[in-house]
Amino acid sequence: MRIDIITALPKLLVSPFSDSILQRAINKRKVEVQVHDLREYGIGKHHQIDDYQFGGGAGMVMMIEPIHRCIEKLQQERSYDEVIYMTPDGERFNQKTANHLSLKKNILILCGHYKGVDQRVRDRFITREISIGDYVLSGGELAAAVVSDAIIRLLPGVLNDETSALTDSFQDNLLAPPVYTRPAEYEGDAVPDVLLSGDFKAIETWREDQAYERTKTLRPDLLEE
Ligand code: 6GU
Image (spheres, rainbow, N blue to C red):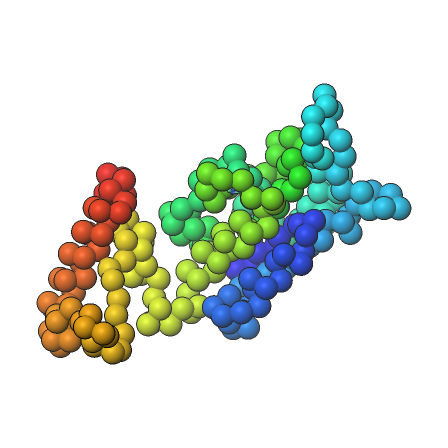
């Protein structure tokens, strides 16, 4: 898979891909992530990328021309299965969307900033608009990193057996069961006996029950879906 990200703040997208599972996925060539600095496509001497909004109102709007130039250049090199705009008014991101996107070959993500982008960008180039939740971030960069992480960890060969995505919360609309490690007792708090029993059938049943109980208590809405 290949993920291209267009942003006015490329530095924000360095560290999420420089560590841990995402870094390993890149090193193992399971995914290629390229960040593109929108300012390189800006207009005039100052590489302008945003301007005042027509009709008045606070906040700058990202202009269509630099974005058009950047997308056009990228599309000359490959064709994208999805061109995603990160925006708080997009469809809410969830595991189902992550699963869906993880099956694509080339994804282009545009990060919005300031007051957002000229509506004509959305009308012309965008196939999908994604939000990561009902709150406002200062830009789409952190959200793009969240979405990329959720996708990349699903790619075959990225996780090993121990961290398999199949047992994640949400993968079956259930939260994950509680987990424990050594010591078996800490200041009087003991690990549930069943986990030390060696009875794998009983352990599996306990985990299923716990996952269900947790979901019923913390996220009953998931059971209704
Ligand atoms: Cl994708 N962008 C911004 N700016 N804020 C958000 C968001 C995206 N998702 C939730 N809040």
